[in-house]
Image (cartoon, rainbow, N blue to C red):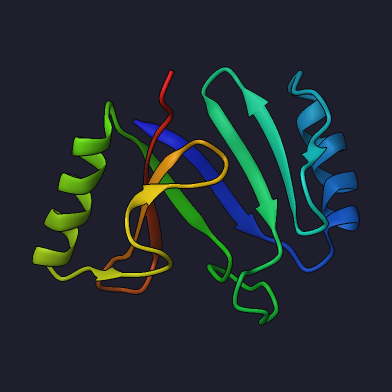
Length: 123
């Protein structure tokens, strides 16, 4: 069901040290910083990430957080996005589409403002 879980961080290096230790206990390899604002951890059930919030505000409970859902194809991502908007969601970030990372993504905020994502990783 899930593609990834992302939580906001105010200092990637401090958070990486914490999560490297915490997740290391669970057998997860140290995180990989792919930029100065994001670090990823890969497990059997998906990806966990920490990131400085994109809006530049300090991370807080929910700010910078995204719950990502896996989709089987790009049509499903588009349908997910359309259903969300039709049922009280608000589109956010770029329109649904292929990102430079090679992942097809769509972003929404639910009626309470929580950030959600649908993702398809082409093979």
